[in-house]
Structure formats: C-alpha cells, structure tokens
Image (cartoon, rainbow, N blue to C red; front, side, top):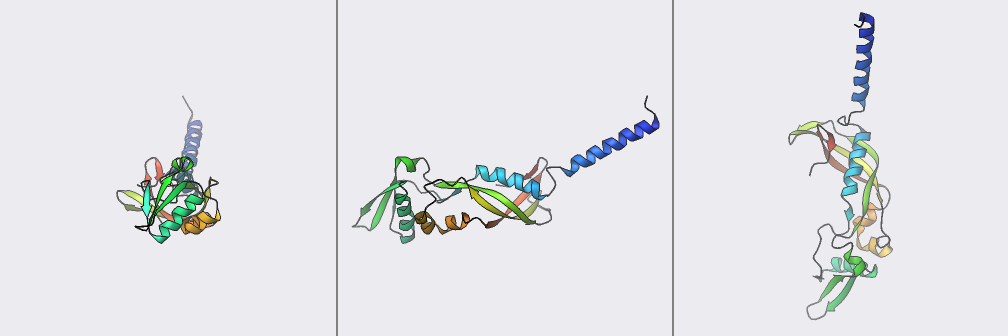
Length: 181
C-alpha cells in the first residue's frame, strides 16, 4: 500500500505527464500541427498546369490554349498538327508526355510559414479555421522549368517564384486537423 505522500507524488507526476502530452496534441490549433497536416496533404495533391485535364488528342483554336499547348510541344511532351481549313491545332502526347498527361503536374507545395489562422469555430459539423500560409514548390521536373512554360502558364510562374502565399480551410477531428474535401 502506498503512503499518502507517495500517492500524492505519483498523482502529481501523472497530472504533469497528461498536461505535457496535451500540449503536443494533434488537435491543438498550432502552426506546427497545421504545417505537418498541410505538407502531407500537398504531397498527395500535386500542382498541375492543366487542372481541368483535357482528353488527348485535343483540338483548339483558342490563342491562350495554343500558346500553352505549344509550350508543351517545345518541352517535347506533345506533338502538334494543324488543320488550316477549320483553323485548329490538334495535340497529342509524346511517349514522355503520356507519363504526365493529361494534367501535367509539376511538383507539390511545401509550407514555409504559417502566417495566421482564425479562431476555430463550428462549421459543417466540425471546428474549422482559415489558415494563411506561405509555400514553395518542390520537385519541379526539368520539362516544366523553362522560360516557355513559365510564359505560357503565368500561374505556374507565380507559384514557382519562391514566395507564394495562399489560404486554406482546415477542420479539427478527433484524430487531429485535416483538409476537408
């Protein structure tokens, strides 16, 4: 049987252990928790030049799309043939392009800083917060890192400039923070 002082010391130690582990809880709204969850999320959700993926072969006469597709021709990911009578160009993937088509993903976000977040508030059945952050893009393939692709895809050029910022909604669950679908 434990004496009262030993029992009190044991209970105090247990309380400190519980309090210390609560500080590191995955459910707390902390920059470290947000960073870990966002990095894991973005590793599975790459950035892509054509998020609304077309089906190849693809035909277009739109000047903006022509510029974009021709940049991918220059990167040796697409081939092009022209149909002059109807003023369109037809694009198809090369063997190298088939590996990254149809979305032409070029890397993933890595969080550099969590700038701010709103106090968690109930929404959609879970506490949610708006997280503002800065990021950089990692694992950019050689085919994407060219002046032609940057000129044809301004969003890509901006995202890979090294100092990009964005906001995202995050929800708290029993297991920790997550990015809702």
